[in-house]
Image (tube, rainbow over all chains, first blue to last red; front, side):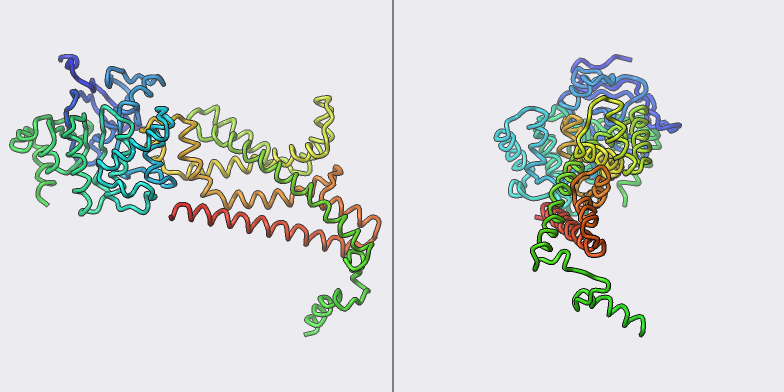
Length: 250
Length: 247
């Protein structure tokens, strides 16, 4: 097997991960090149979330190697800091800081971790709030916003750290149906800017529109990997076909 | 019915001035000597408050510093937390006061003032409880908050300072208020080594005036008033912090 493409910004090699006896990831290998949009799907418990959580070290992998933006994730503090500085993450449950205003949520990271001046951080925050189309909510607290608005704030919070890579862990799964689109719109727009993205999602319409590469996982393994038109038209395995049938016809 | 009459009579005694049981003259603001006695009793307020506040500030800081290793992934850090809490929690406050004031100078060769002996003993004793309160409060914060802080590159100290502790402190505020009330009451024990606080003043006055009933009743009222003020303050603080989140 070829060892990583030259332009791969994320290179995952033979990664395995256990939770006790449960094998969450089994010999996973995946390359993501700069600017590529990857959508990961699969049944629950298939290891999709674990995989992207390994990329910014919210989980540690037991074997194999993960290289992100030229830095190998080997557990040394330096490598963890380097990687999380270049990787943004959006969570299913938003995880906004509830005791801080939207503006404070956005400026905390830049000011404390990157040494940006408060005035500059505020400017940056307003720019990204405008991009997720809620600049008027800057002084509100998260609980005063709808779920869709909260998730857009969470996206803006990640973008304020000016990451090279954005990870999305089921960003619309906790949302009411009528709010899913506003979040997907923002994500699609972000994809248009050339951001490298890995999205774990069941929104297949979004995947078809935005993805360069579809990944289907089951039982901790990558079962199928293909460009979207091929992936949806002619899935190569029965497991993938089953899964697509289930989520496309409901 | 009979019992009620007796109770009523007892309650009316101080007002009626019938002096078989009560002798309020000893602390009556109407007479010069009564006023002097009253001022003497109230003069203990300064050290009760100073002692308790100093001790609670120290015990909150120490408690937090002991709680954090208790939440560590590292086993020996967690063991340190357990040993500290179990050991300190097991010592009666009165025993600790005596040990610090009379025992510690023998060990260190340095004499220690009554005030600081009291502060150290009270703070040490309370810190074990503070540590458990903080540990519970911090543990109650959702793991997603740490992950979000991690993903915007906050250091451990910044994560605690800006994300976790502000939320944890809101949740443990009622328990912290409890500890402050408890501290104010426990400070009365420092009277045994001669600290000139409320209880000591009352004891001294009882020795000269022989009116324990009235003097200790005033003492009870002094603590009651003090603690009602503290309770009101804690409630106000709770309310304010909640309002902060709502607006």
